Length: 448
Image 1 (cartoon, helix red, strand yellow):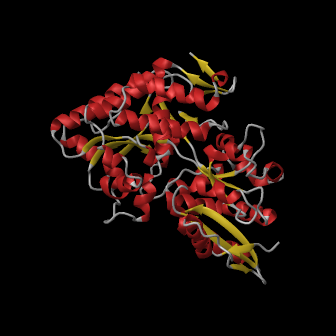
Image 2 (cartoon, rainbow, N blue to C red):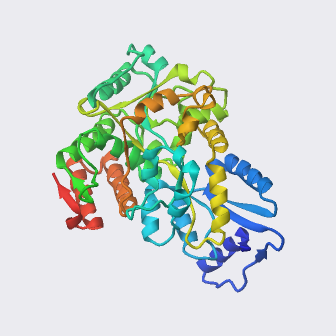
Image 3 (cartoon, rainbow, N blue to C red):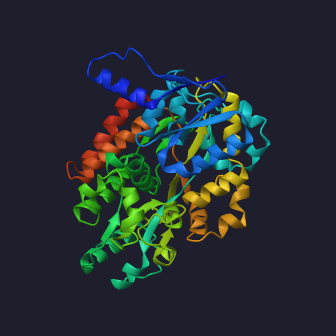
């Protein structure tokens, strides 16, 4: 089927006219007369990889034109709006796995269960990451192409300068905080510890900070057996207490720095290469920035400077360490015009060749077992895959429950209020609990 291409300039003008109270009378539409057009929407930070996919798919499929639709911010919201109408729904989208279930329940996504049941290559995907693309009804609605782990980055050069052990291996939260305190007391100019704590950093705040910490308390975030959200007051108080300590003692970023939506990029491209921060709770993918050469000067010796280690549980109990994993997946909107062609595009994008190219560019962990064992994957320059694979054994996954996206936003609001000093840890516990009840209903909460 030939899909009509709505020129984005025309859409922008339409939005502007509606904003000022004028109804657009005409929409400029171009129909592809000779070629079948496949529309692919994706976050703009993967532009290079998608340009390569476009070229490869068009070469392999004569008569097909791939229209790339990069989204530059607020990807989840924009894609949800696009999928509401057959006129604007792309044929292929990229989903953060935490919103798959809610998009399924909204009727936005087409099931891919029949496709994966008949797809021999599906057996080459890690079983753990398949959880993130399965909805509550048990069916698969996406094909994963990246995953990650969260850990603790620390700067060996700064640690040596202030007299801390360069072979840092904390076994509790207190040891992390003690190192941050020693860094501050030394008078070193570097920020002791960066953590994500604002609404501007979105899912990073709820996943990389709150959920990493909370998972280290020994409590559950969501009870999968009962399909209920868990409220354990002491675990929440301890989690919020760690965050409060970082900011009350001046160990973390200023709120103006933490509120910068581009802080993740700034950390990787500027602050870490310039030794402006000593420790960071963040993901394994940072090395991709250095490998691509996105820094002002080459940072080829980055892994001599930076250690990437497992983040400890609160007191070293349980497995001793913890992490959270997320990831991204290809999906097909229910109202897509070219589902069969979309399936072909996705299968090519995640084949062994293109998945290896992807991880080499991005620094993300692979979701394919064959790529994970390949020399090209394991012997990359500026690589932390060995360390990341070690952390994977301690990881947890975000629940795919329908209300997760709303709860994640609620967590960001509570954490930001706490970090800014507006509320205490005790008040944060109450606000989190009250918000959770409001979102899911008291009948969907278990208290421990």
